[in-house]
Image (cartoon, rainbow, N blue to C red; front, side, top):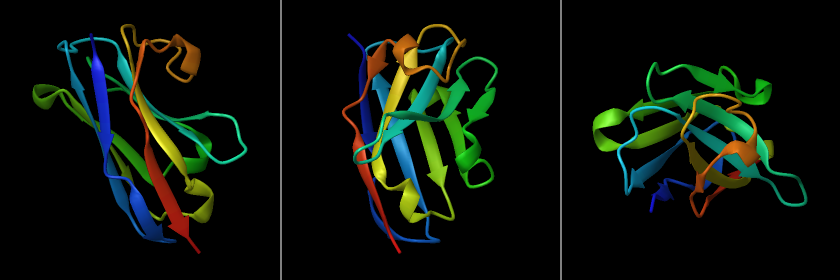
Length: 124
């Protein structure tokens, strides 16, 4: 059974930075993709970023391009989300997810495994 454990959330002021981590255990990922999604209060879950395990191709939603960076450490089976220039609208619970094929990475329903989520709160 695959387990995904997020860490790194917290409270930050607008303009600040946070780095989220997602450690995967239970299997070694050499293909497929990892994604970050978020759910803000009263809103639907939305795609944030994704990265393929193999080639390292990255994907971002428009609202975070230039501010967030997704990266991976294959040896540690860990994916990171570096979040800079944070805005109050980035406030949400952030979830990491894993899938076995690196396609349709922006679609939450195509992911096989999910973490428990970590809260990110950005104050103005």
